[in-house]
Each structure stands twice: as C-alpha cells, then as structure tokens.
Amino acid sequence: MTAVDPPRAARALGGAAAAILVLEGIAVLFVPRGIAQSGDGLTGTRLTLLLVLAIVLVLAGGLQRRPHGVVIGTALQVPLLATGLLDNVMWIVAGVFVLIWLYLLQIRKELLGSPFHDPAPREGGDPAA
Image (cartoon, rainbow, N blue to C red; front, side):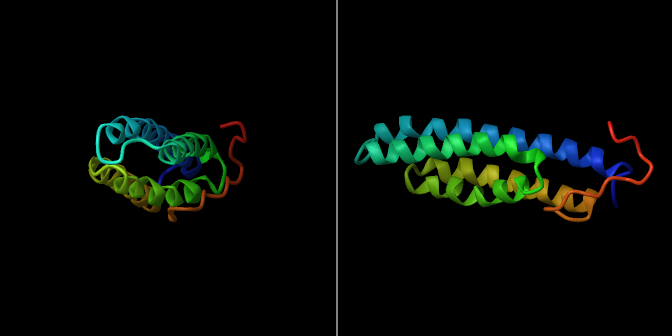
C-alpha cells in the first residue's frame, strides 16, 4: 500500500519523526537526576555526554525535513539506547523510543516505498502544496 499523496505523507511522517526525536532529547535530560542519586554519581564527563546527546537529538528533530534527516535520526537511536549503560531504567525508556522509531520506519516503508528516501514530487502537481 502506498499513500495517495506521497509528498504530503512524507511531510507528516517527518513531523512525527521530529516529535519523537525532541521527546527523546527531553527524556535524556532526566537521566542526570537518576545518575546523581546512584553509584559513582554524576561526573562532569557523564553530564557533558548527556547534554550533548540531548542537544543533538533536538537538532536532529529540526533536520527531519531534509533528505538525510531520517538516516541521522536512525543513527542517533544507538547512543540513545547506550544511555542504559549510565542508568538502568534508560534501557526501558530508550527501548520504547527505539521501538516507536522502528514502527515509524515501517510506516514510511509502507506509505512511501522506502523508509529512508522521500518520494519524488508528482508531475503536474501544485508545487506549493
């Protein structure tokens, strides 16, 4: 099954991908609180890594309108999942986000024919749409 209007579906799915990445960035910002209360505590290196990851996730959300945005978002799922090494509960939280991301890729594949490539604009269509 493909979408009736693939460019419109691509924009809608890009918005969903952007929202997921921003939510992932917000979730990463909660990790330092959990780390500070356990084990070795919150070191400067751990805090820096988490803040950089959160910023990169939010910025990647803004890249979802670009052709390579989904690829970047997919690559960022690995460091998101790796936050489980810092705080055990992040295995669950990041795992849920990764499953949502995989579901989004599946929907993109069904509607657009490929999870990573946007459809070509339709011939004779309204370019402003």
